[in-house]
Amino acid sequence: MLQDHLLVILALLFVTSMLALLSERARISYPILLVLAGLAISFIPGVPPVKLNPDIVFMIFMPPLLYSAAWYTSWSAFWKLRQPIGQLAFGLVVFTATAVAFFAHWLIPDFSLALGFLLGGIISPPDAVAASSVFQNLKVTKQVTTILEGESLINDASSLIVFRFALAALFTGKFVIWDAAGSFFSVVFFGVLVGLAIAHVVYAIHRFLPTTPGIDTALTLISPYLMYLTAEHFDSSGVLAVVAGGLFLSFRSSDIFSYNSRLQGDTVWNVLVFLLNGVVFIMIGLQLPDIIKGIGGYSIHKCIYFAVAISLLTIVIRIIWVFPAAYFPLLSKRFLKSDKTDLSWKNVFVVGWSGMRGVMSLASALAVPLTLADGSAFPHRSLVLFIIFVVILFTLILQGLSLPYILKAMKLPVNDDDKLQEKQITFQLATVVLNYMNNNCRKELIETPLFRRVKERYEQIAETASNELKEGEPDGTTAKKRCDMLLDIIDVRRKELERMQRRREFTDELIRIKQKELDIEEAGVMGG
Image (cartoon, rainbow, N blue to C red; front, side, top):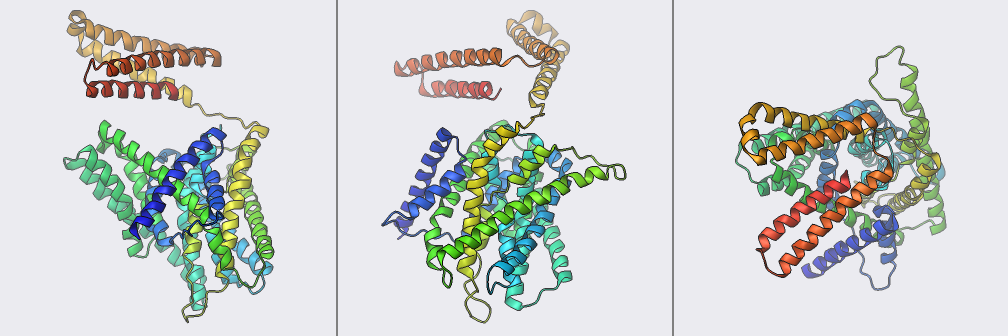
């Protein structure tokens, strides 16, 4: 039995890797391809049913995925854009849940308002991974990506709170708005508090104990689970605990990690997050046959009609929300001081169109219980699951596949100055090195050729960066020629190392060290 489960897991990991490779070739966001592949695999005769346990998603998959997203989020950018992020992560979630609740109650016979809020709470949060993977190869402003990433970090918490309150209303038949509001703020506050408390303990361990790169990496893997499970144990938000703790530790990472801990940790986390995301998305597609079997009382065509109508509603609701939310603060600027950065209508539309649903919605849907408190069957459970699955599939395909074409047609202006800032940093760092050497290495600069070569190198770096700052970035042709030349030089050296290895002129350990140096150098050239 264990071997069968292990074989299924290994097969999913292999298929995920191959499909991700295919998505790179086809330039399609890999979550979209994985969901479609899972759907296609599920209809192959003889394929055993694969059921996704919601506890596995919440307790195993979500903590590291949320922690990784928080780790790579810029706290300063997040705080600067806190108002639009909050409007999306809290305001839009409640607005979407309410609109879906009343629409579903009106559209579907015998569909109660409490059940509508349950459905709305489940489908209200867009998926972080789907949006970031779509934007990976597209040119959009940092404002847009920061808003979407920040929204996805905390909207899961707000949607889960709506889900819990709706579920409680279904079980008890009561819903008191004041009790719900008080519980909401309590869950949010204590979730953040638990996350920060555990993050400070982890920070102290990294900072004051003699850890190694392996221990540092292991602690980063354990930390999100500690934050999530502790917060959930005290009935607060595990999602916000992980996000708050991840943001804090990321902000203080330069104080607690050495260079080799950072290199090792980044490598491990990149692999882990890729595999977790891939498995979850492909398993979304594998769930459909089992969901369809449970539908009763409605024809499949009627269910598709309900699901598509609600999918279109969620898309329209988001667009309706983002424009007033973006431009109302601009109207009140003369009365209120604001540090927000203005967004063009094109950027606002991109934020509105980037509402793909994914992992969290499916996990919440599968967490809907089979029976009520009195033992009776949970009303319309299979229909709710089917609608949510279609919403995920519909938004991923429609919005995910259309975003690149929309951005191209809109000719979205990209005003980011990352390249300019990169040159400024390079110039300032080189200048600091030169000042240090002139003040502290005068004797060595006169007597030792090695010191003079190092100084000449940084003088050249500073001069190059200074010229590019004065004259602007080199034209695309010149930059491409320079990049190609550097890559050719790296390739020549790599081939020479391969020749040395074949002839066993040096030890394998030394060859591997030099190969790693070339890999880091090539990564620098490709990134620059």
